[in-house]
Length: 200
Image 1 (cartoon, rainbow, N blue to C red):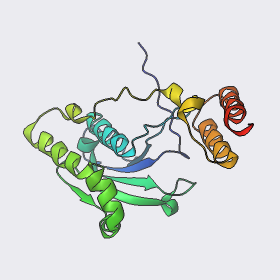
Image 2 (cartoon, rainbow, N blue to C red):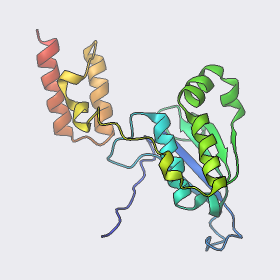
Image 3 (tube, one colour):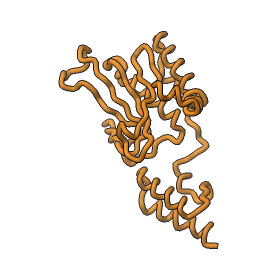
Image 4 (tube, rainbow, N blue to C red):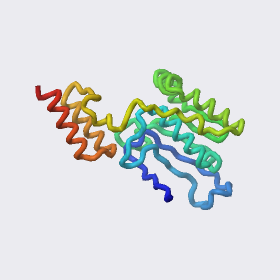
């Protein structure tokens, strides 16, 4: 079976990363390629709703594809603005195959550090991740277990969404279209929601 190609969404990815390659590694064939940039979102598809779990999955994906072995280090960024670039992103972590370093700006932002790294489980995950590597254990078992409580259909289910104003509804619908939901399906959802809750 042919493997589906991952087409990156360079505008709406929550995370992106730069892999600085080790040019002396035998699996890096071209001296002209010194770094690789990757993105967390595929074009036309939704990202995971839980953004800390999304980051964990992407780190495991990078490890399973041997980028920790082929790279000197990997720097992971988090998008904060509308446009995905360094000016609108914050550095989260720099990772090697033996250790990691949380960026000083994240540590100094105590609210973000607590909510994202501690409460979100990233610190705990990183500790277990590197423990598995040191012991030669499979890191894929660190993947968060899938929750069956939310279906993709729920995004466009008028009974499972709540908007205080039409402006909030319109902004949500615009986001759904940007995230790859069919225009006709989103338009139908918007019409039904307005008829049900706003046209009383």
